[in-house]
Length: 437
Image (cartoon, rainbow, N blue to C red; front, side, top):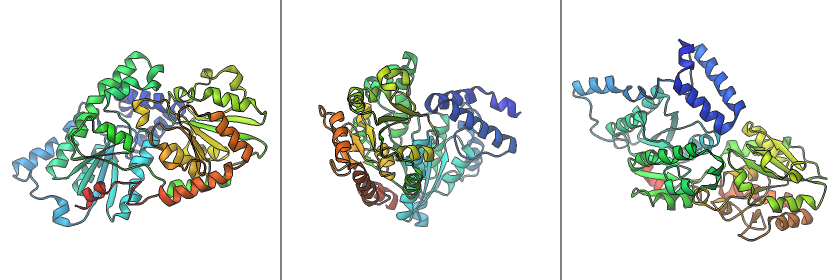
């Protein structure tokens, strides 16, 4: 029976998705963990479907609904928040991408505790858990969900329970115009690009079914308002206690060679070679000026895309755990974070700046996306406007030897302004009022 479950078509689709987005090692590790859980007869809310195929999960609540309707008990007369006076948020989302899960699903627990609200989350395909946490909730948040039978069922149950719904998203997955101009998609086959475009209306369907929308950046908020009449507010990604503690530990464990100046470029998913190409010549120029300079590439990157003259100066570290990633990042002197200028990237958040600042490494960023909002130019990093030379900016930091000082300032700013707090720049007042009201 377990073998039958393993070789279902939707399992292969899930394996292919993880393989494409995170690499073979991650896909195999997740598959092994899933098999171990299945053999033990257990399964956490996580990356795999555990309650049947997508064709049937939308009917999970049907027997319950029929029993309630036949017993004249289907409708809830008053919202739980009014009846009880308490606040309990149920977050139901797509938890498959580690970075997204960390910043948009797990971290809010610390934030909502500050607001005296209980918080619990579930993978949307963990049907028993997802439906269960709705029963005790006063508010529900849907994260990164597209229209499909199971999501319709969950939304219907939330409305039956008279729960207000917030939709949270951190990429313009609903936007055909963003996908149509996204330069990182150039390396994908045509059928894959069409798939993303075809999925966009499904995300917008769920967005428009919510009462309010939260997004990760002001740029994404502006773009979302072009697609929906629902109120859109900002809840930025931030550094929670776990991130700050992991950064401190990585700084202690990192091994830095004082005789080598290391420039880090991190890529959490495929396609970011397009972004790096924005500064490739400047990086090559900077490295060529001294033999003691290295480029450190972390995560997914096609090394064949680099010129041969640059490859010999590169330290490559493949996709790994968050802790291992921070340790390598902490060994760098600076981190560079270019973005190609397009609609999709203008919606990007500053998570890479947060990661770098947590380990005391200053970031060099452009003006695309929200990364510049986390940096005080010249003190905690550099914000380079179009036309400015990244090579010269790096040269200045290397010559002045102030990377460590800038990194300390970046870490201090992270703790002072970008840790969990119930105010801007982390969260808009309207989102707090939605929960408290």
